[in-house]
Length: 235
View (spheres, one colour):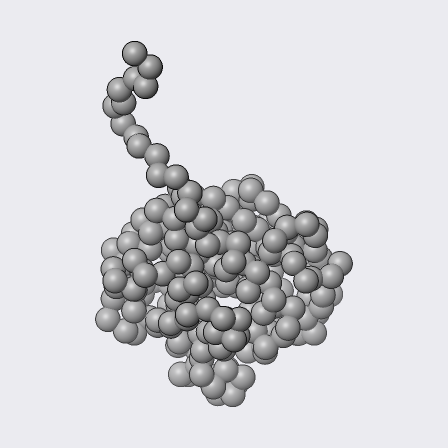
């Protein structure tokens, strides 16, 4: 499968803690374990021309993985529209952590996508609430992330097509942390864990979920429908 991992790559340049955890960038860490899983993976970052998301790159991408946080506003609107059209055409999209506030996710959801948050070394317990779902393959009843940023409800998104994971935090909050959506011919999965100052993407369960998600999001040659004025099939 051809996968593109997109990342702002800004925290890694300005925060020594992030650089020490992800010396090849968050995109490099994710690309690494997806490559080990047998996929053809390329990376793209914000400061590349066209944010690395040229028409050629997107046309060759079956699933796009998106991580963003501090520079959502710097993503050009025409590039967002380009990505959106590819999703509607059938490209899979995996949105991670603070990508909930990205232009592309908000555009596809049609809502504000806001939430509660707190950085205080909370433990996150990720409950598997749909164990038969392909994205939950190999994941037990729950897994824990020792330290993570808290996200809490209400999460201002449309009702998900499927809810795969729900998180609980030591502060008492809960959060819909693994949710699927369909837009056009494309499939979208939002996965909550992944704050930049924690080694979350080095954890085996988190990697397994993302590996499962890209397999699920790949388009399975769904039919292309015609729209607009239409002639009758029957005479």
